[in-house]
Image 1 (cartoon, rainbow, N blue to C red):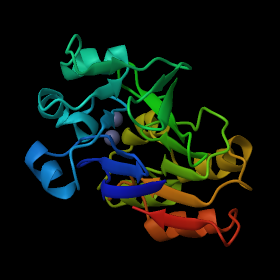
Image 2: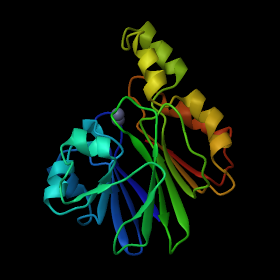
Image 3: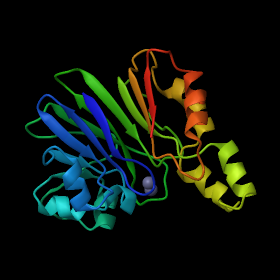
Length: 235
Ligand SMILES: [Zn+2]
Ligand SMILES: [Zn+2]
């Protein structure tokens, strides 16, 4: 099971999960033409967490190309693909399979300002590997023991306060951030509580803000709680 970042952050998100017998996209929040140039082949499926454009921009284009789109009812409705024959309904707590692949997916509700945002636990039933994918959520929400985790860390309080002081970020933004996006302090507290870190092999930090997060600070904070053999990358 290989996780790859094609684009990450509020300007656009697209990730690839691939392995023996599958090539899956998670998010498609960049223009369709750009996305098609970056991917190795048309994916078996696209998982979309929520309707915000930085996660769903290419969703209609991919659906019309015959790619199955896995997302919640609320996301499908807001993204304009509800009722499309290539829409596959993902519901909180219910697993669904991706046909002709060894993959099954469980969606779970997350905490974000979207209609019905989800996180995903994706299992490769042949390789016995799990990916936990959580982005655009104020909290980690689920407990899991994945080998690979891709988790948002959108901001850290020191960088936000520096940005407020220098007028880059409005003070009022802090409230929205803390209610809708994962901050470093929450991540550091929740990661050991929610994940069985003995199982974890790779951690990808995604959706960091260019204004409100310092990647070095995030890396240092996480290194303080993770075993040294865990691969850590901050995007
Ligand atoms: Zn986003
Ligand atoms: Zn969002």
